[in-house]
Image 1 (cartoon, rainbow, N blue to C red):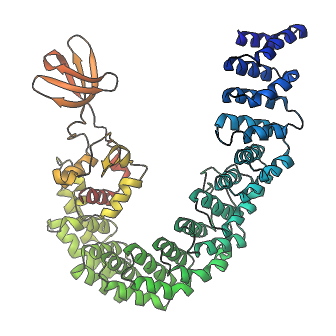
Image 2: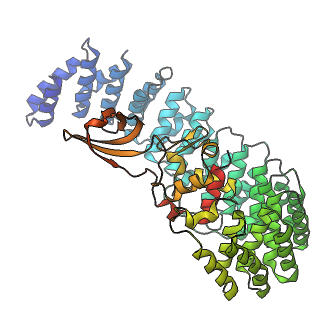
Image 3: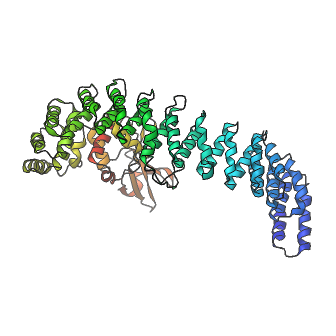
Length: 587
């Protein structure tokens, strides 16, 4: 009945009728039933019936929170001058319950007033909820004054203010947010926004603040690393905001600005106890060709306790800097026990060219580890030196004769495809003609061995275009659309793993075969085959759930395609395939 009267109050053109209906709602504000009180308040608010302001304000103390909420929204619609304390008190009374609906009503009331001075003055209110309501109202109004809450004693409110300034954004308040980098904080979300404020402001003093943060061992390692990452893309910032991902392009900034304030700190950062900090610092030294960091980089290369990836990054940096320490680092890396480092040294020495480079490649091919041989072959494929073909030719002959180990076949193939020498081209044609046409993985057999399991893991987990983890589970993580691959190597061969990727419809794993059956009575069912005996088949149908069907009732049975798309082989290079097979075969 109240709802019907509300429609009449909205539509009636006669003031006498409006007043008569409004009187019903005003009486309803004192009804013993809480929902009647609340709905009466709602109708009066929607009608903007300001004559009921007094009784409605009284309901802001109602014992029932829902009634307070509806009354608060109603009074908010009136936009009564000087009602700020009323809504602040509504929020303060919510300190214990922390009801989100009451909070919303208070925020809407404070927002409607648009009194920025009043809202800022509430930063000293003793009630956390009252301060929060004022903060959120300033956020809705997108006012710079919200920065006063960055000094709040409640970390939750500081983060709320930072979110408003960074995420909306409120550009005028970014300097205040960036200023928080001089204090200690535990919140990762807050640090990301502080760092992003410096990054978006983009002045030399902001770059200086980021490098100070990166060098502060008392701050969280993740924040320090993020600060360095920002310096790495300082010159050409992405158009996407680093926090929200929204398109908010920034103008390019001179790299020299960041280098001038950050370069001096790089040698110290390269000795930091945090590996992630040292890694980004090495990448920055390489990017900026920072020769003053050479000694520190050489120290990283020489550190046998450091992770292989970090030592390789330092070696690459020295190779690009081309200082006197570069050759020393290459010599050390060439004799190191870490294969990854030796492989990188082989590649860099070979790329340098000259007789020394060719000798290094020859030695790697004859006596090096698998990784060193693969690196040497990759260099030979791209080398302009005529002697490179002389070194490569015996390997292409082995490939053509079928005596070359599978682990090196792909590397010799790819190196040969980049050469134009008739002998090498002839060997390549001989090999290609030897492939068996009826072999489902015949065009990919060179990817069965010799891959990098770490690189394969990265493809499996991170490559969005192939989305392996979305459908398959490995060691408890991933989807359940396809088979669990946690122990596939103990049950299946590498050939099976490769075939499942490049020809997924040839053999579908048990329990994941799709089928369409048409019964003699005309009904049809489609789904995954969960189990099958001589007499019946059990299908998991998306529409009908688990269904058991007698085979004697089936008129026609059609096998469906695998859920694994055939197109994956078009998205993955042969190097990708080899790495993926190696990863799935490693556990």
